[in-house]
Length: 361
Image 1 (cartoon, rainbow, N blue to C red):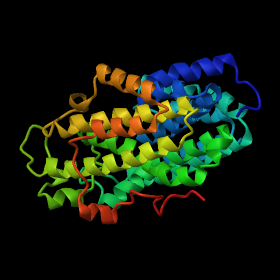
Image 2: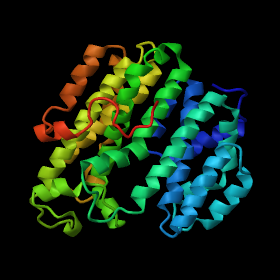
Image 3: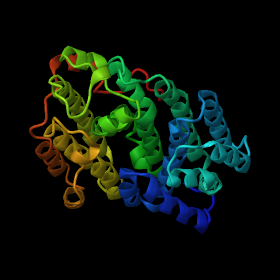
């Protein structure tokens, strides 16, 4: 996957900064085969830079669009990375110290990118281009009223996570001819894989997002249960809130079930890739369980899974990673008691196969 070995400084920085700017990926990426892990970690950091640009509330929309365009030009070797880094890092105002350091040291990140083979760079560039095109539309129009409906939520999840599922699939295929032979089976599930994980984060981060003036939930679903997203307040009675949340939990579980099917299409000998996928699924299912049991939660901390639960997932996957029957049983066991998907949502939600806005050929 590499034309030449990246410098030790670049590899060490990538590992160190990944631990500081990621959640699940910092745990799961080290499970991948070494070269694939370097590539996936590098792609994640580039996507995180795009997120950091978009998330700075003091940057005007026009500057964000300009920086996103130029980030893609840097990736295509059409823009000087050092000049771009200086412009962006001096413009950022409200971001974490770790994210700002990531941006400031983009030249090191790009050392790893430039060392990869052309098909790898093309795969990452496609993902980043789609993210930078679609993500801003939603980020700059969302409000406390939420998104219009579930279709809009699906589209948002595609731009920030579903396309990442597609990218990972293509990177897995570049890593293994055996996986590449299953691409036609994997790709229809790849978007669902990304969406299941993203929806879990959206649901458990609801109140933190709301404090920043953002809501990613579909307001029509909440309106049907008598809940007005625009007027919701923590620690107040919101009788229609939990029933609508349960419906979204059910949607997320269905996507995670597709993610399990995706993972089991990975050949059994690729235990590292399987662990990478299965750990993330396990963490998400347990997060949804806690969310379902805490209808009056007011912070993401209240529904965060414990370190003990994380260890339980990693151990269970370690012992069953090659056993498809056992993995299905573990998924059924861990998701027992979670809400079932209502029939009306089955008809309008793209839970099986590639959504019609996915841009995979």
